[in-house]
Image (cartoon, protein in one colour):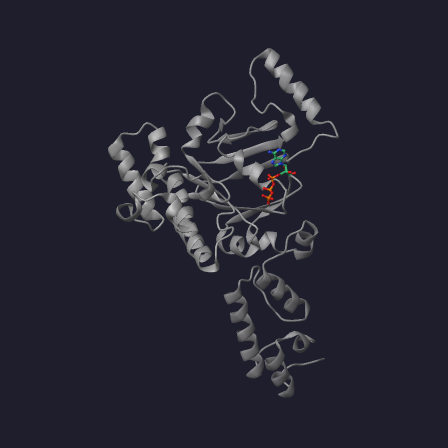
Length: 336
Ligand SMILES: Nc1ncnc2c1ncn2[C@@H]1O[C@H](COP(=O)(O)OP(=O)(O)OP(=O)(O)O)[C@@H](O)[C@H]1O
């Protein structure tokens, strides 16, 4: 499914979020748009245009209050634009009946989804969505079993337990399973690893990567630029409701100073690579994660030690402590 935002603005002050049809309705819509252009209107989103392509891993970043949650709530028609439109495969989500259909194809996982568990058993909680779709009970059972298996849980082991007796990490898995049981084409995740310990975090990110690898389109809001750099095909950065940048991680993280101005920091490895580059190291990749940075530094230091490496004038001052000192002592670095 292709999800397209066309010049979308959204104001919580707008009151009515449902688009009306007909002549009178069009006039009302226009008046509202006029009102919306009033300078004192408070906008959660402003003139946002982009599309999430089928099969893409699409990251959304931005400072607190920049509009990320509001943006993703448009993706399955939970809210409709005050101005502009959101389409799913060309169909306007604000048109009658479209959002209801799209909702089963676009699974939205809120922040801390475990807070929304409600049923007395894990089985009933995960079955809620498929039952709502009026699927036959044997199909519901198949989906519950499969969805729990996808998140590493067994229906036989925990199906009859209360979700509230599970650990926090398991509760989040159950909440995920409830969305997966709808068999969505697009999975929209709002800060999916917030509040998890480092191991559970890594497990969840691997799980999300596996959903994407299996062909699912994933939209992920995250405060972690490291996670987005590793996982996302493209990243949209929002600032005060507007699009600040949209591109591959390499493009988005190319200018750390600009990111800093909107309250974000490039991934630590990228920032470190930039600092080394400024100090004269020839680091040529557009995007650095820890492994790539370690490999390139090691290769350069090897080259220097063998007398074949080239490092610009003051690189020795910036290279990591001991190794740098040794190299300088060996005369491996030309201080120009
Ligand atoms: N229910 C609401 N009513 C009124 N204003 C709201 C509501 N929800 C959010 N806002 C405002 O809309 C703007 C965007 O909020 P939103 O929650 O989308 O940002 P966010 O980037 O997801 O923030 P965070 O990172 O803190 O979750 C903020 O100014 C916020 O105060």
